[in-house]
Structure formats: C-alpha cells, structure tokens
Length: 373
Image (cartoon, rainbow, N blue to C red; front, side):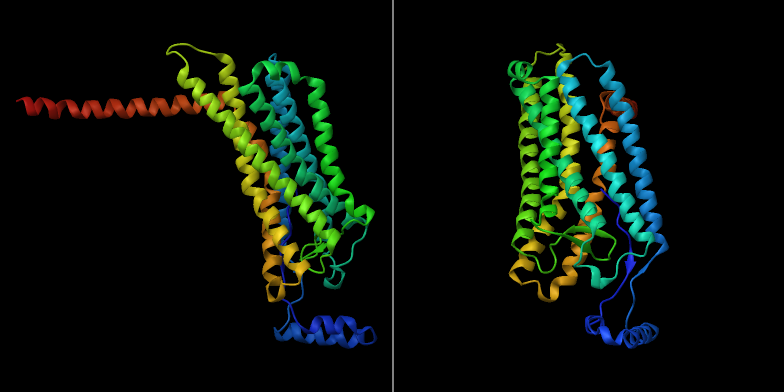
C-alpha cells in the first residue's frame, strides 16, 4: 500500500497554547526555538534514513509485482484447463491491483515526505490530496482481502463440487466477480467524499487515513466498522474455505490407490498452497491494522483514550507499516509456491534425506560386523 516515513518527534503541552494565540506568532516561534535549543522540545524533522526506506520499499514492491505479473501472464497464456485459467485470472488481477496500490499511495507519501509533511495543527484538516490518499489506502487495502476471499471460495467450490464449478464458473462470470470486488472496495473508500466520515492527516503528517485517533464521530465509526469488519470477515471466510479445500484434498490423497496419479489433483494442490500463502500473508500484514483501527476508533468515540493517545498513534503507525508489506510479499507467493519450485524443493529434500540414510547405513555396517565377531 505505501511505505511510511520516519520522524523524530516529541510532544509538548505548550504547543497547542502557542498555536492558538494568533496574535503572538513571533513570540511563539521564539519560545519554541528556545525550547528546542535547550532540548526540552523537539520539532518534527524528517530523517535521511526515512526517505531511503521509502524508496527501497517502493523499488522492492515494484520489482516483485513485475516479476510475478510476468510469471502469471505467461502461465495464463499457456494454460488450457479452465479452472486453472480462472485462478490465474484472479491472481493476475490481484497482482495488478497490488502494483497500482503500491505505486500511487507510495508516490503521494514520498511527495509529502520530501515536502516535510504537514504541521501538527493541520492534522485534523483534510485537503484534496489527503482525501485521495486516504481513499486509496482504504480501496487498495480492501481489494486484496476481497480478492483473496473470492479466490478461496472459488477453489473451495472447485475442489468440493467440481461438476457444479464447471457449470457455474466461467471467464465472463469471473470478470463480473472482479468488477463487483473493485466496486465494493470503491464504495467504502469514497464514502468520506460525500461527508460520510472523514480522512485526516495522521502522525507524523505524511499520510492520511480514517479519523480513528481523535474527535471520532458517528460517521467515522461507520466507516471504521465497514473497513475493519469487511476486512476481518474476508480473512475468516478465506480461512474456512482454504481449510475445507485442504482437508478435501488430503482425504482424496489418502483414499487414492497406491501407484495411481491424477494430474488435476496436483493442480488443485498447487492452487490451494498458493491460497494458503496469500491468506497467511494477509492475516499477518492486515489483521493488526484492522483490529487496532477498530479499537482506537471505539476509544476515541467514547472518549476513553485519555493518556494512551500517544500509544495508539504508535500502534496505528506500526500496523500501517506492516500492512504496506502485503503488496510486496503477495507476489512472492506466486514466485516461490509454484509447482516447478515446490517440486525442486521436494527433490532436493528427498536427495538430502537419501544421502543421510546412506551415510547412516554405511556407518552402521562396521559396528554390526564387530558385534558378530
């Protein structure tokens, strides 16, 4: 989604008082400069390591998505099985969405970072760029979760009810499903554009998100509940579908007569393994942000944040950074968890196991001969 910047900052109780006194701006500036020189107050300053981290994160994400996209497009053009082609169409759309979701918000965050961010008294405000950045974060955050859920449901139907899957799932219906996923995520993202909630600048002033930390109102709570609720529901549904698919494939493998081979099952196993990889990545990257955002918004809405506001700001910032890694890690699921790669790993492990067994047998022969003598 984006790579967030790093700032050195510490809060001061004098800052709101000085900022509210519009008639004494010069005196306020002198006082703030004097406090910063004495070490009692630290102004928010961008660090060089922060901008390097942003650039490296964007570069890694772009490279990962391009490599995965090349692999998926090549596999889709060579695929003749309809079920596999449907899965590849979903996967290609997910990688394209991840790529765009990595570039657009990342570029906006980098622009804000180079500009030094916004001042602390502008955190509760929102301009056009903040609205677009906040909407992009919500949209490109929900899309991968919705797509992962749709892919898991499609594979679950294909594994458990293959005949029904072949009659229901077509390329046209897959494209319609993708359109519904994008429109659902877009619907949630554009609600603040119609005054249904708000996107505001977040600490340290280089990114925008739903207002979950201070002065959260009823409409903000509605968006947070939609965002977190839909995201967590998608993860739970994907978990259930992948569990059913995995158990079904394991049982089919156990019931299969020894020596027989079914190529369709190997394709199903590959797709389910990749879906499990996507689900695990999404759970690790997105669950903290979905949960922390909901808890922070509830505490802000009920006015129980109190002295823990700084702690929640840190938690939200950390969880957003974790979520930003989802678009970098997702492509590596397709790069590493392909049948060719898994087969090579299996052969290497089998070769090492065979070598270890041979060494054990050779070491055991002299000792057995000694015992016989």
